Image: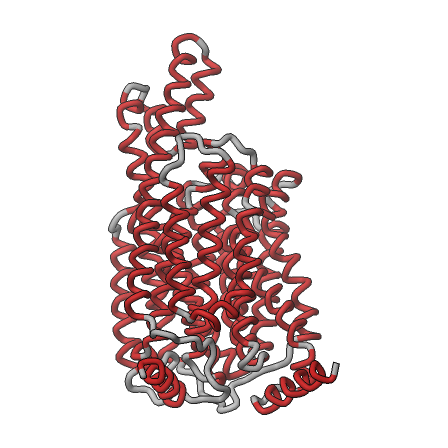
Length: 550
């Protein structure tokens, strides 16, 4: 008993030495739970509307372009504002900014189901939700980084990373459950409900935290990086599906020019929003690369999963939602255990096997038959989420440990931005690949049908299924052809999806080789010493690598 008491007292003294108050230290796990609830509020919005799009199309008489922007408006605004939001939070109060973000998110989420009457209003509400999400997500990780002492910080960040990793899937699951019993309004009210719970808990439990050095906000750098991310993300989303239209070219030009201006400015300003010297650090750069490529592979391959469930395997919305729950468990269970593994075997031999496991899961997906079983899905997807747990926790910790605690927002914004860019690239490029290969695969079958029906079959698997239903209802020769249309369309879609999964496996495997060759040997450090500056942190990492080499 005395040993336990002595250890607790020693841990408290270490926390006090790092500037963490006793009251904050004693309720740190309650604070983490509250921050994860706020994180879930923002994450749910990323995937919550996909299953509700058919209802929204009918309710608001929306075009396909408008449907696309109902989803993408959130992502575009969210990704563009991450850096400036995190910088404002560091300077003026992380809890304060998080609270403002939650309020904005809840109000925008409530406006859509209760007041929106046009597609434009719906899209605008999603964009405003993106503002709220950008104020919340990076702030939660910043607060985790300053609330926990250095010894416990890796475990806390591991839990945060696990929640962030499955958050989008949980949003999809919960939305599917709600849409089975209610209409599209529930998809918006879900996020509002999470936010309404998070607001009073945050106000009561989470302590205020600011950059004690009062580093001024780099407003000019914030403008440049916001324009750069907006232009880049817009181009990524639009170019693969709509080609290089005038607006896409303009967005790409603005994004490239703003990125160049941002780099130029950050190298000259006294207090940069992103210290570009961080990229000289192996740990920081490798964490950015691993997070970006892992999310590219994961989200890109998951893009087709809902359609496989509903249009190939024949699941309804409720079954599709429930089916996604078991594969999430490996990430939630393994995530908090990963810091111990890193302490035993090192970062390299945690991250590299994780990437190999992810690649193995995707390779299994390439062996699926045209109509896979649930066991096919469960085994392969569980491997992917288990691998994600092994990769994301060390990667997030490496990134956050590369920046001083008073600039936690800078590290948090970089971590969240790499996730968003990786996910956007995966959806845009692999989603476009799936669409194009599917169209090629059904070309002959579509050519044998009347023009309108043929176009519907060529456009999407959902269109092909709708045409087959109409042909079955018509009877006669059309009914006998309907089954052939279904078989051809499903086979074409699965071939295209498995091609994307193969690419995801190759990306994960190539990233594993890169990490094997470049991660420091024997590096078992998951956090920097408290209060260290950029230069001190870098020197400590170099010294650790030199010790290992000796």
